[in-house]
Length: 276
Length: 269
Image (cartoon, rainbow over all chains, first blue to last red; front, side, top):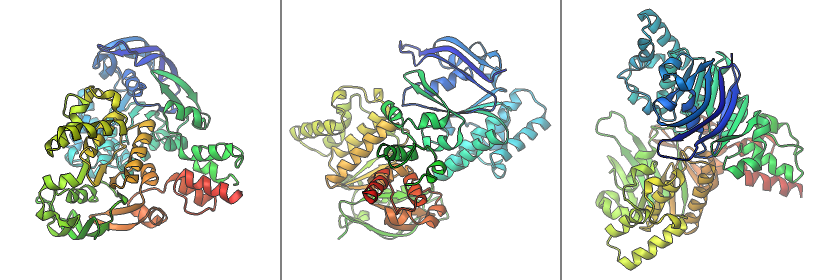
């Protein structure tokens, strides 16, 4: 069964006629790592919320079409019914954190599932070790650094043992070290634990190196969908719609136009093999 | 005399046992564009708050345009030093774009005619002319960030401090912010930029102050700093991709795509 199946999904926010998501259809295979890119306001974040039933249950509006998460009809489910299948991590971790200690933060989800204390503790220890935050178990989440807070938010999702994780620009407010630490966690979830990952991210250089597939959103629609090399080497198309191509792609594209290199590359590893 | 002069500055927050700034000395000349880089918690924000007088030194001194900041009121410094905060939502409060922009000059007692001239000029500079009567909160992220900039430059400060001016903005908005900063620099403004966006740094800054644990780890030109792998590693910064590629291809220290491409096309001619 497919982790995610979306058919003809449309959504407009309450009091708005504009379809922020407009007839979107796509499938996601088990273990895929998908990057979603697109200019501000294209509907990326809204799409994330429609995958785990936050739309239409918490965010009001007009929705049509169909979303299936492992065969469950997501639009007709309550968010908690999907929590064991799909987790979500938002741009600003502070909007997700609320407990007095990291441990309590992580216990919240499994406690609400009514799990045994031993099982809850096992999950907390495991989630903390995945994000390398074991040492901070008893700290007040709001006193942690941005990168640490975001790793706690990821760990809190992991305690529900989801098979899909959706992350909406999880590193955009972090400093370089925080970005690196959080990204290493995401890679680990995909590479070692075979999780299905949907990552909204505007840093295309990072996507080029790691994802299996890129979807480009524009005015509520998915206008490009394919492998990272195919999509991210389309430098001019990306710039035209307001997406920054990877810097390596921009450089090799311009040199290619001047006949200096045979092709456009999207990652440093590919480009370093070119002769200039 | 330099426009900004930090001498052996030590600053410790009242509730802390460590120095947030621990012996900081540097000078910035009029018209420079300097970027301050470093991890969160390295002291960047504490440092810039000394330039507009929000913080006064625990030890050492800070002089702006020759005057010790400990002798000048924040209100007086505000005419000289404009500060654009990271999150424009924290600065915006008026009901229309024009009101938002007029607030500063009104409070500095600038007469109506001069104020209208400046507001028009700033609206056109930040390309917000068509939004004169719009509610600031109805603007997009990029437009809000330009409005925050407009409402500071309208008071014509000599020194502009920009804290993460591109965070959360998309490609087009980042490009337009880069162009605005360059134009302000060309007009002779002294610009101090706090950012983690290496693209922004490489496109606008001439000099970098690299901070770590309250100290300046490195102070130099972009080329000096970005070719110092050890200092970058210590502060968890990456070289810009253009530079990595330039080095992988055995070329020199080219920091931006433009520089690398010019270098290659020039060499090959």
